[in-house]
Length: 156
Image (tube, rainbow, N blue to C red; front, top):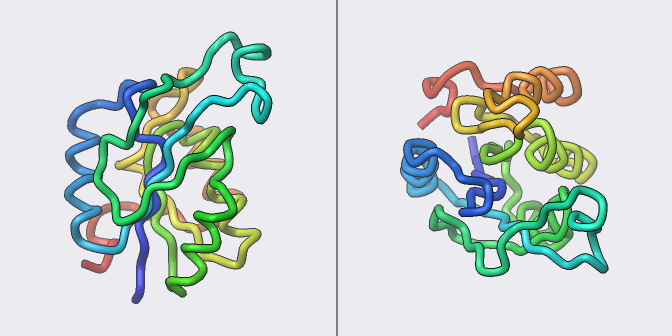
């Protein structure tokens, strides 16, 4: 099975746990990997005006990936989707920060693009609403069905 890892916003602004960063980095070394980094442009996404928050200007991915795409807002950029589609994966394994927002948005975009988004819940944390990520995993299961139960399902 051809798999690609998509890493959502593992960057300093979201204060990811060190063990999460290390575990994602280890997995990224075992397969093709793509990461997103959230940047702020108020003319594109009104984070500061509406939410009183914005990601740091100098944030970079804390996980080395084969390709890194900058995004503005919740969803992956079109260029990342096009790149993933060009790899023709059987499934896109998704992990990272904010299971109930940005990670879920990636699932919708990948699903709509004809990809098979598959959540890795033990490598995903939620937003401040539910840091455990359980809400996001339940929503993912409801909308896309593909949620792995443990590392043995990675097929490595």
